[in-house]
Image 1 (cartoon, rainbow, N blue to C red):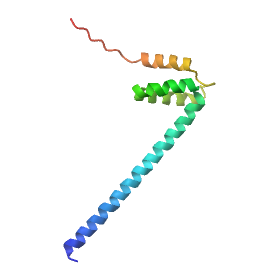
Image 2 (spheres, rainbow, N blue to C red):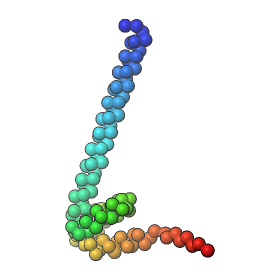
Image 3 (cartoon, helix red, strand yellow):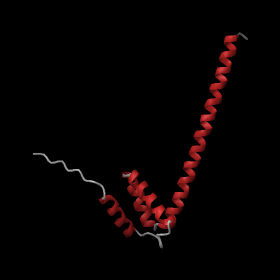
Image 4 (cartoon, rainbow, N blue to C red):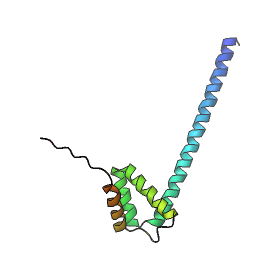
Length: 111
């Protein structure tokens, strides 16, 4: 083997190892994300009625960021012990109205 071939071979091995390492890191991150998602689903099943979960699932289709924010707030409330019983669909509606009401409305009027 010439020096050039040896350098190419070493460089190729380095690139392959780097790619494998990146793939393993990405896989580990994906597993962590899935595990967190499963924990979140379990908590939501404990604190929401089926109707309320259905409402959030429907809302997630149009406003995923908003639903994510609501879920995190509900989980925090549950972890602090402020959720005594399952949250019903009506209670969730009220919560959604309050949180959505905080958002600024932008009006554009044409003259």
